[in-house]
Image (cartoon, rainbow, N blue to C red; front, side):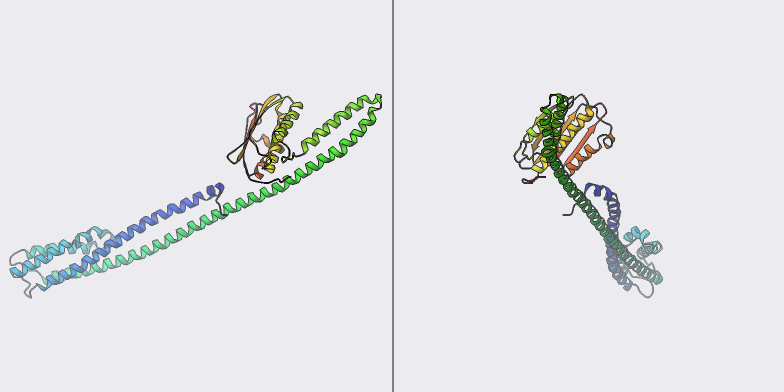
Length: 397
């Protein structure tokens, strides 16, 4: 599955935006070129009609360079017909683009002169003037064709530039997708590694807990039995009792509860009782709807997160109050911890809280969750966690 992460979007947004902004002027220029080409084609069509009309007017000339009244009227009609086609005015409007201002101006002036001469009774129209207009029309025609050819070349270049920009955009998008996919795979790989490490740690914890309970605790129990028969060893007996109790507590804290048979809220309650007995922290637990038997791995991680929060409170918060809430809602597990203890500055968690909070972050990463930690010196700490619930069956660590 190809994805684009938020980090990839931020990294590639500016290059994509710059390429896209470069693409917009190309589109605008291309449209203007196409529009100009359409106007040139219209002018060429007008030229064809004008040239035919001009040829018809030429047929009306007599060898004496003079016209009778009937011929003069027809000539004026043809000249006015040329004006009606609007070729000269259109050429005047585009003369700045076509670089034949002189030709256009000469054509317009000559046409006005011819109409004026033709309108005078007995007026004479020099054949050279008439021929010059025809030459000017040919010059205009060639200029229009050359300009159209240049427009066609420009349109082709713009089209090629647009294709290159589109290809560049596609390449950048593909790179961004591959970058996002690579990041996702790296995160997933890191997550799998953390899962294996976490499972190995839990297995080692359970093994140590079993060794403490079955071996060391049993050996101490035999020592206690031997001391109990000697009244002079009463002081040592008390030390052994405390040591046995401490080892049992340690064994209990190392062992991961089996939530297929044990209640999650009861296990959390035991953690709270143990923490309150060893410190001056007063802890309030707000249990919600939970399904630890369905999501054993997730609740196993959450159990360790709660345990770490309480351990930090016992070590660092002193005389304080703590609040814990766990709630399942909308296919997600919500966990909140807050206290009014000593707190810490941003960055201090890399020092005094380093191992504990790092372990919490790793567990949240394993569960694909979201974690937010906030704290200020003297204002305690708040930790919020949202974990998506996925079926894991009855898998144990």
